[in-house]
Length: 528
Image (cartoon, rainbow, N blue to C red; front, side, top):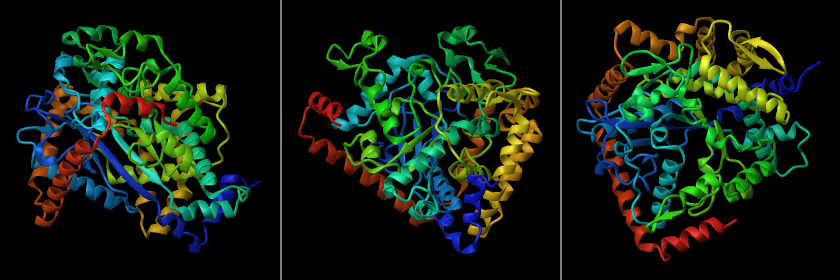
């Protein structure tokens, strides 16, 4: 008896239907710290030649003034996305002086909170709000956590894809917007079920500097990590400390139960968290000596504070809350947020891995996706944590519908189920890259030494160096490669114009504000 997944695959088999898979769109956001030649966080302001982070469409900052974020435009072809990302790196490296971009996800040498400058976005109300939000993250979670970097993979189907599916499903009575949103939430639920696989395949942060734990590294004693060398701590079978409790997946948000079963439930859960007072944050206070310490004292300051591994997204209008935009207009794309930066790749992600991400996400969209209830939610969460902390342990087991399965067997089964997707995407794009990407991931499941987390530890051992020394070596290597590439005068001129326009745009925002910040913030928080 055919499954829903098999039925959907058959819909795309005729060559005439391949066009709906050709319009899949991608965008990549890569975070990377600016560091000095001795592996310390830069204390310099955002380089003037890179424009203003508030208004630059492609080069901004995340938490710290030193944490650059590169944002590509949307492209249908993965190689176009990666090409633009490479150009952003090349242009940026021309304007960093002696600094380089840190190659890894876990930060360089940290020397206390004073060594981690919070990002500045100017004096406009929206710019001040961004900085105050980051002040709040500091007081709630500490500064070191905000120096962790990663890759965000943005992914969307063309409208024709959803129309095609709707014509051949029982969703014919729904508004197209509602069908699309339901489809993206189905994708998200399956992503949550299977995202442990991404942690095994792409996790690249099994090691961290002692300095991450503060107090000259003394705080590391409470981390539960093992000593790798005088500078580094690790877990022998970990794949991604970044996505563990010491990273983005932190205990402070454990009380939140965000539901991905429907758009309405998701919006309500997030909105409630933003409205709900939380006594530990009330103890911090809203202001001190007239200066804001955080945007509010609730469970979440704004939606973005919820550190999910994937987010449903829609581009919001200026001043519009993300949750309002998605409630009114539906889901536009998804943002995958759990990918570590691969330190061996100059861009933090390879072409092979990006093609696999498409295969994985199309599979999540076409596979049947029942609602996730409490019992399965615990299983999903535990599987993810298991792989993050000990995904390379020989014979490590996961839970699937209450039954124990080995990670290797379950992973290989999933890849086998994805094979028809890879073939369809290759046929639609006149390519072999999608099938090749699947083969590369299968090799990692059959040989754990091929995973980035294993390669990182093996390189440290083989070269007899610390985590910081390896990351610094790779950072210099990538910087040299970017700097030696001759960009065309046309592209240099283009990025210079974008930077200048961002400066003018920020100045315009600052001069056009009609409200004081207190009134602006009150109105923003009160808006639906």
